[in-house]
Image 1 (cartoon, rainbow, N blue to C red):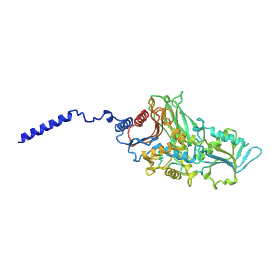
Image 2: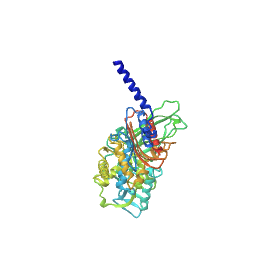
Image 3: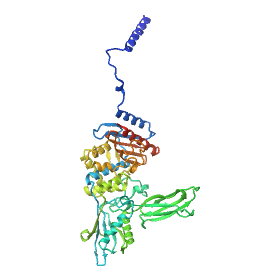
Image 4: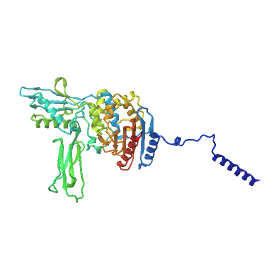
Length: 504
C-alpha cells in the first residue's frame, strides 16, 4: 500500500507540473518591463550599491536625496541619525544671516575722535575706531590686495585735512563679546588660519600670510620669509635653513599660545621652491590699530601716540563726547556670504553668527547668535529636534545635524524669495570654491552647487544639482568616522554627484 500511495503522489505531482508548464490561453502574463527599475529607482539602486561597497567599513553614512519641487525622495540612508557636519554648518549660518539681515546689509564702522583738528591739520586727540564686527577688511574682498582697505582709511582721514595725530589710535571691539575662539575648538589649531581669533574689530582675517622662498644661491642660508600684510606686529623667529635636495628635511612653524611670538625652523629644500603658510595673530583689536598706525606713517600721517586695545583703557569711550570723522561701509552681505561658502571661510562665518546676536539677540556672542538661528528655523517650520548648533563654521566637533534637517534647510531656502543669493553663494563643481577640482569630465561638472565639510574623520557634501531635463534635486551626504584617505571618500561623493546629474 505504501508503495502504491507513493506512486500515486508522484503521478499527481507530474500532472500538476505539466499543467503549470502548459500555456493557458486565458491566463495573463506579466510583461517584462514591469520588473525593470525606472530611472529614479535605478539611481537609488546604484547609490545604495556604491555606499555598500565603499571602503568605509569603520564609518557610517547619512544620506537624503529628494526632488526640490515635489519633495519626492529619491534615496535615503540613516536620514534621522545625527552626524558631525563640519563646514556644512556654514549653510545654516549663512541662511540665517541672509534671511534676517538681507542681501544688501552692510556693516558700518565709525572712525571718531575725542579731540579737534587745528588749522594745520593736526588732530589733537585720539583716533577711535568703533568696531562693527565687519569681517571683510581682508584681501579676499579687494582683489588680493592686503592694504586696500587701510589705504581707504588713510585717504578718508586725509580728506578731512588731517596731517598728524597727536594722540593714540584706539580700537573698540565691544560690539562682540571677548570669547576669541569657538565652542569646543581644539587648542592645537590656534596657529592656523582656519582657527583665527574672533573680535568685533579685525583685519586680514586675523592672520598673516608668509611667503617662503629658499635662497637660490647659497645653501645653508635662511629661507627668505615675507609677511602679508607687512607689519612689525608679529615677533617672528626665522631658523628655517635652505638645504639641498638630497638632504633629509623636517621643518615646522607655529605661535606660542597667548602671545605674538612665532617661529619657522628646520631644513627647507631649495627644490621645493616658493610656498605659503599662514600664522594667526593674538589680540585682533590691537593688531588692527597697530597696522593702521603703520599705514598712516607709510602715507605721511605721523601718530605720536600708541595703538591701544580699548579694553585696556581705565574708562570706556564716551561716544557722546566724540565727533565722527567718517564711516566705512562694508561690501554687501550677498558678497560676504559667498566669501564664506565658496572657500569655506571659518572666521567670517563666526563673525556672522555673532552679528546675529548683536542685531537680534541680547549681545554679540555666538551663544546669542545660535538662539537667534534656532528661533528663525522654528519660525520657518523646520524640525529642529535633531539640530545642535555649537559654532557658526563647523570647526567644533560638538555640532550635530541629521540629513533630514539639512534637507529641510535646503528645501526652505529653495522656496525662499532670496533663493538665488543663497544658491549662488555655494561653490560650483569644477569651477569655483572648494569643489572647483571636483567632478571634472562628468555630467556633474558645472552642474552642482554644494557646500563641502571637512574636519578629522568627517566629510560632508550638501546642496543642489539638476537632472538632464532641468529638474532640481536637493541632497545631503555625510560620512563620519572613516579611516581611509579623504580622497577616496571624495571619489564616492563625486560618483554620487555624477549619478544625480545623469538622471533624465
